[in-house]
Length: 294
Image (cartoon, rainbow, N blue to C red; front, side, top):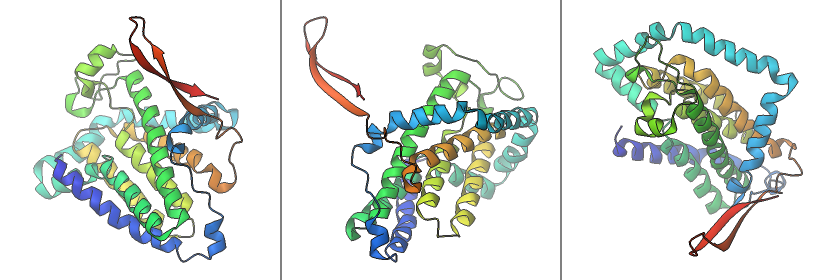
């Protein structure tokens, strides 16, 4: 995937976001004035709380059935991974139009597109003073960062091969792989979950949560997620069974980050703060120490 294509997607995403910010301007001023604009550092300082809420939700008894359902869906699709992967990969190899379609699907989940959307909302919101657009940009950024942390933890734990580097029909799972080996050839270990799809999903959820009155958003967002999924499978980056966890993760984190929109803000949300202070190393050299205070 070229940098040129990613940059094109970045600017296309900005264009996509600008009309959405304009819709927010049609609201009555009191509705917009009631929106709290997150502070600049909240996209980082709220991450520990987001991760805690995610872990708490995953372990709650009432969500046990959902978690088991996602695990079952993953296990079932693993059984048919080879056949379902070939159904997408063979046309991609033999047809140039399918190849281009697949490549653009992948590029729409590579992060450039998502941060292009962030840039569009932020630019429009700042230029017009629209709080909802600025909040959307902030929450997408926070959701992407939180999702990315969980994605990397799972990838570094499961160690599953991607289709293009697979030694077996459905890829070897190397649970808790040697991290030095992982870093030498990470593509043999990082199939589960799909970072592309989880990032795209959480971006879609945040937009949907901020603009619930725009009923057409699912009719655009869900096909785009399907396009990304097909592209990832067709280009042999992911198996289809990598996607249930990715979608569940992106959906959950998007809902967690936007909980304040629904009046579900936790009183401890702003209790976490980064702390940076000078110190001295064991060799007597001056250093900066960083941590979290709560």
